[in-house]
Length: 278
Image 1 (cartoon, one colour):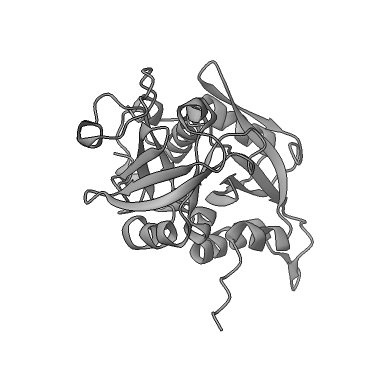
Image 2 (cartoon, rainbow, N blue to C red):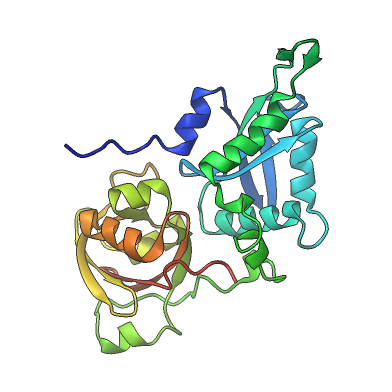
């Protein structure tokens, strides 16, 4: 009998009281957040989440709505606030949703006659236990960021249509192909699939068509299929099953990025596994 996988981090947070509080949007290239819950609450723990994957755990001593306004406006160069803002923009430009979850400190916990700041203490425990990628310091993601804003990194969107034939030139020349980047989240790793941003939907084949997934420098081939029924916006999901799950585990790793080149309506190439934003 196989051991049960641990619960996803977001599920663990919801169990202790975190609730969906808002969502990031992109308007004219600038991030804006709709805070629909706990906007006026102070001393709040909050998290940024994308497709059920935990990205960042923060704490606001002032009203949550004011804290989020600070993210909208940015901050000093290379500050945590500025870096997270750039990451949010980059993900939104790739049609990856970024949601806000929050949990206010109830202010009712006492140790003797002293009030315990639950939010302050719990934040560090949650970061240690759940290891969200945007909270990493030292050799982690925060210190690896180049001063160039992430939304200016050339990860995507060449405008030319992709032909239907897969040949040697298509798999060796990377200069004329649409491409994008995504993080290998928990569900991708666990189930062996990845979603395609809406903007690239027209470049893929129809629902249930077969697709070749070339992996890494070796271009090892996984035979998968296109699923257009699972996402409400009909954007494709590329399903590689167990083979893709194992490749993600061995070559990319959880919460690490990979680049996807769209070779043809029935072929993609996964490149640069585990390469952080640089």
